[in-house]
Length: 421
Image (cartoon, rainbow, N blue to C red; front, side, top):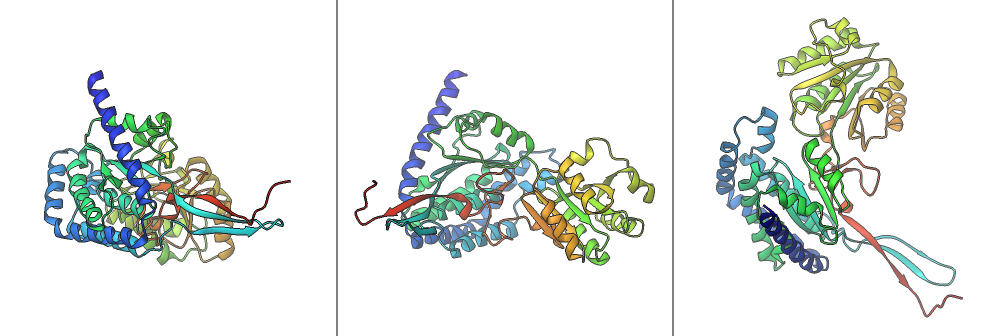
C-alpha cells in the first residue's frame, strides 16, 4: 500500500512540476494565443461530441443507483456539450485580466507606483460529478494565465478525459504547453491527498462538490483553499411582493435544476401574505414534483405539509424538496438566514424598494438578489463567461469565481533615481 501511495505522490509531483513550467510560459502568453487555444478547443468539443457523449454514457452506466439530482449533474447532452463550447468562446471574447493596472498613484518624491494583476500560478481543482467543470475550469485558468491540475470524481472519469482531449488539442493548435491543463492520471483517492499536501507545488486549491469533499479539503489542505461548503440559499417573499412574480421566481429558483448550489432550499414568506399566497406557491411547486418540510406557522395555513425536523432548515437538499417558514418582516427573515444559511445566495421578492435595501444591506452572504431567481448565481450569468466555483469565504473572492478572481497582483515602482533618506 505504501508503495502505491508513493507512486501516486510521484505522479502528482511530476504533474505539478510540469504545470509550474507551463504556468511560467502561460503567464507571459499574449492574449491572441490564449484566445486561439480556447476557440480551437471549442471546435474540438463540437467535432468530438459523439465521443464525449459515448464516454458520458459509460460513466452513467458505471454508476447505478444515483439520485435523480446527482444523475442530472453527471449527465451530458448535446445541448450541454454545445454550452461548454460556447462557454470557451465567451471566455475568449472577454478582456485579458493579466497585466491590468488595478491602481496607480504618485508619491511626493516622484515615485510612481502601479498595482498590476498577475496570475496566481498553479491551481488544483478537485470536483465531483459535473464533467462540464473540466472545460469551465480549464478555460478560466488558461485565460487568466494559470496552469491547472483537474481531479474529477471517479464517476465522471471517462467524460473528463474526453473533454480534456479537446482542451489539449486547443493548446497544441495555439502553440501553448499542454501541461497547462492536466487531468489527474488516476482515480485513486491518494491523488487528492497528494494535492492537499502540495504546498510549494500548488498555489491554490478549489474544491467543487458535496459537503463531504469540501470539508475534507478545508480540514486537510496545506495549500490555500477557495471554496464554499454548502449552497443553502433562501428566497424571501416579502409582504409587498407581486404574487405572479413570486410564483414565477420561486418555481425557477427551486425547480429549474434542483441539484445546483444556487437552487433555493428554503422559502421564507411574510406572515402578512402567507394565508393567501402560500397555498398557491405550494400547489405550483407540487405540480412540478416538489415536496416540502414546513414550520408550525406554515402548517397552520397548509395542514397537509409535512412538519420540519430541527435540522431541516440547515439542510442543503439538492433535490426536489423545499423547507418553508413563515416570518414577520425583513428582520425576522434576516435572522433566520443568519441562523441557518451558508452565506451563499439569498433573494427577496418585493415591490418595496426600502424593504429590498434593508434586506440586501443586512445580508452577509456572498450574493444578494432582488426580484431575481437565486439560480442566477452563476459565473456565466454574471458575464464571467464561466465560473470555476462559488466562494463564500471572507478573503480574496466571494460569489462566482471568474477571470478577475483568479488573479492576484504585484506592484511596479517607477523611479528617476530616488534614494531613501
